[in-house]
Image 1 (cartoon, rainbow, N blue to C red):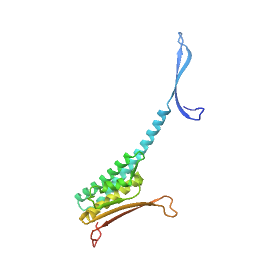
Image 2: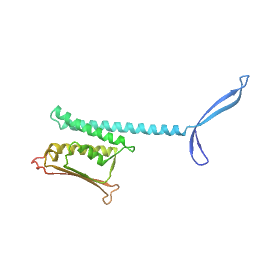
Image 3: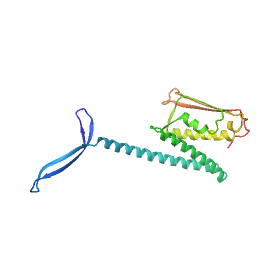
Image 4: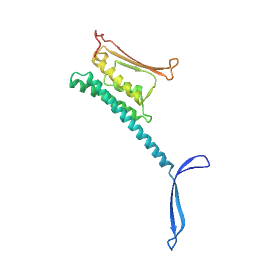
Length: 201
């Protein structure tokens, strides 16, 4: 049960009562031990919240994996194409989760997302700049996959496919008139690449 102390603090108490019997076996007194278990109750509450968050996150991840699989399959002509595309997207999703789980608030820094996806391609031809921005798990996941797709396309058809190519990534936070929340504007600019007559698939 709970009690309210004179200072207004609420405490959880676990009270255990037991009889004290006389020589004739009759109950003469009732004794008890009252233990403050507020910390235990708080721990149980946190565990319940963490389990609910974990269930939600796992459900969301599995839904994203299904969507990635379906989308990749629809754009693949061969099993090898599917495996390459799906594997890369799955790896990007795993990198997002690694960033999120390292943050106590379940967030990921935009700079870390961009740095992770461009690390394999940066040969001195990449410029990245922008203010400190952290994203909630779902938004970080979506943006991480988008950056992965852009980097993959740059490797196949754009700035990373030629020695002359250059990539400039920047972002800024703005609040348009009437907007309830700030907007993130991300710029991905590739130069030094010949423009193809047809758009890549």
